Image (cartoon, rainbow, N blue to C red; front, top):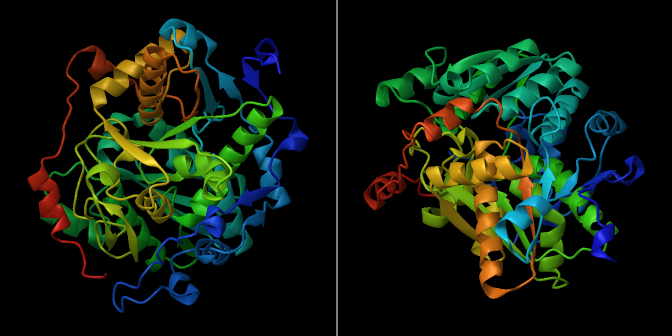
Length: 457
């Protein structure tokens, strides 16, 4: 098909939206290792997870054989308010870079939460309501997940208790207020409200917190409050399942115009958006039908894939959650307070960790100031102010496009623009004022944290 016929924005029709979520684990030759009970070191059974998670979500979490799950009609109807999201050809960026590469980005910021997180939030709220619960608890880093969940809970009349990483609570007050607008209670974590929060503060006085800390507090509240369950915005298999709508739409949009991707890039913290974006592409790669380059981009301050260890570890700092086999920096590792709050997690999704360990995808880490330089360049050229998390993918997409300029290769690059940065202006201010720091942990710091890994191999 002639390139002139490819529009700037490729939209699917409403009837072309996915009707099923895709479970990548069903096609993986090496399945992700099971969650382990930290006491017995045996795989977690559904009944053991029931006090923490919703029943239907547990089934999705533990199923690694069913390739497709039907999306309930109520969720499909909600999706239609902001989906399908556009796949955008970055013509202006290509021209500015003078690259022969073709650059596309899947834009997930066209809803009030400002990110992809709503794709899973509405699903998890739906199953909580279906189970007859009063409400849910959760953690949030930069606030996109907490915002999305507060929206979803408001839609289904559920109570929503959010534990927000303290540094983000202070840096991003407006995102906090959006959550409160939708009826959620928001507590800076670690807090004095929970036994685990008090313990963390005693061990790390003055800490700015981490996603691992906030998870511990949210789980404690869920398991000690009648009629509540805990929901998570990333890392878990069920979340990657819901987020597969991103990749399914992306691939359908490319196929609609006969476009073949060469490189797929996504930012990686816990793994939700990356796992969702790459799902159908990784399926084709596993089956030997395509040979995409798939690149995970993480912050140099929290480099779980590039400098972590593939081992069983606690999913939370308070060590109350099950053990997951993943690339980890150690659950005791508290990242520097960088501005990509959604990427400040010590581990990585078990599914993505297995794929990375099998050599099916690459990983790179990038410095914070380089990320914001790329974000500013993108904003000036493409007209969208990106979230700090998404900007990690932008940075590497630009790098790959410039490599094509050097070699003359006409590769097609696809990356995930997972959210907008309108609530992240404190970060942009620090970048513009020249006071943004690039903290990179030493080998000794990482080794000290990894030395505390549980003995579960």
